Image (cartoon, rainbow, N blue to C red; front, side):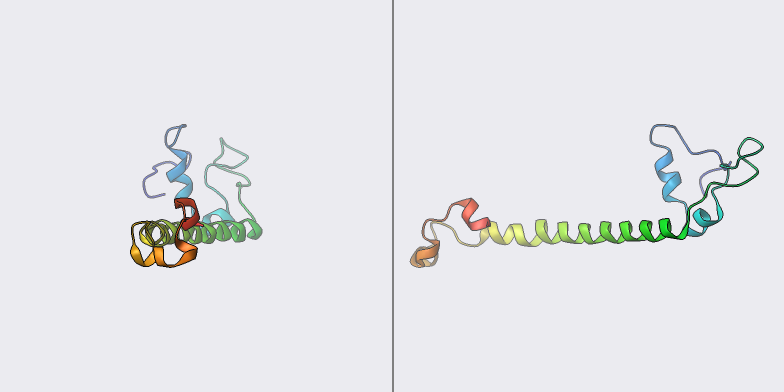
Length: 110
C-alpha cells in the first residue's frame, strides 16, 4: 500500500505481485482486498477476502519459515563446520581410538 498508487496497481505481471502481496496485512485480507470487487471494474461490491482459517494458516507458514531458517543456519554454520574439523586421519589422538581409526568423510558426518 505504501508504494502502490492505485489499488489495482500490482506492479509488473512477472514479479511485481510479490512485493504487493507481502505488503498485505492480516487485517486487510480479512476485510477484503481493494480492487478485487465484483462491480465497477473491481472497485465496488463484495471484495475478495480470506477467512480466519486462512490467516491462521498464513501465520503457521510464517512460523515454519522462521524455524527452517534457524535450522538451516545451525546446520550450515555450526554442525557442518564441527563435522569437517572434528577428527582427521592425521590426528594422533583420533587414531588411538579404534572406532575413529578408519572413518571416511561420510562416516564422520553420519
